[in-house]
Amino acid sequence: MDTEQKLNILAESSRFDLACACKYKHEPGRIRGPEGRWIYPASLPSGRKVFLLKTLQSNACENDCSYCPFNRAQNIQRCTLAPEQLARTFMQLFDANRVGGLFLSSGVNGNADTTMARMIATVELLRKRYHFRGYIHLKIIPGADALAIEQAIRLATRVSVNIEAPSAERLSQLSRRKRFHQDIIGAMSTIKRCLDENNGGGSQTTQFVVGAAGESDREIVRATERLYQKFDMGRVYFSAYQEFSAAPVTRVSSRGLLFDDLYENAAPESAPGFIREHRLYQVDFLLRKYKFSREDIYFDDNGNLSLESDPKMVWARLHPEFFPVDVNRADYEQLLRVPGIGPIGAKRIVRDRRQGRIRTLKDLSSLGVRARVAGEYLALPVS
Ligand code: SF4
Image (cartoon, rainbow, N blue to C red; front, side, top):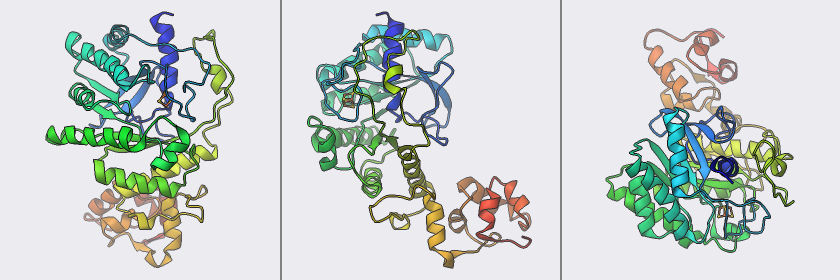
């Protein structure tokens, strides 16, 4: 197989990993670039927009994660890019102005340390031989040695390790080989220590696979909150579990996409799993950007979020005593509680009403507020 064929396979394999600051839209991280498969648009932590080459170094894996189409039991075509192959290909794409950064992950080919060594060698080539100074996101393999993690942090712009499940018990339902505390939480602790020693430079991210272990949304939200508190996470990502066919796939299709067959029956992105994923992102935003606390998030008797209504709307309906909010007097935090008003809209309302009263829904629309939604919850001089 030549490098391009390998890249077709490996880049397609990496598409379920969202923890790469991919642009947040209705379905975060599932936006493809012009290449359709290797290259993803992403917003960097700095806010700058770039295209990332997103790929695995290898889809060979010793692990048995039941949610993963590349676990060792699957009869699929395996391949590995050598560090030199991958670094050279990346630089060709970079020099042709097609990518501005790299997102690199890998199956566990050998063990955690040999896998990390291969990935680090790739990044080292990019930094030292090719003098690439741009964005590199490097996944840490669970169970990696602390020295490898330190080296990865020195070379990459951002590192992350996927938590996958909200507890050791839940993870044990997905894998008999991955150890929650030793391999994953241990790696997060090492990353945090190294970042703190770097005078707080940078932050880590992580990702849950949602719906594979029978966990509830409440378990994920609790775990997410703890992750932000304990490890200063830059972001937590959620990836809806998608069932995959166990049918053997052993050939590269005419378009070079090995996994066409594997995913042709994949669930549409309006399926409940994706709505659930979207609700978890909404909760994440409410906790981080809207000054909501966990007590403001409502779950059903099974501990799950409503699939029908977004969690901010659920809160508003359960708190009629809070409304209507006077748009010309309410403070920033009160405005943030109003469905249809986000942080940008709330800031603009507070800024613009200094120049004169906000009178109509049209005034609100011009400030970026979803006026039709917000109007039901606001007191306006003219309605
Ligand atoms: S370690 Fe990663 S690539 Fe390997 S089976 Fe688990 S999720 Fe898949």
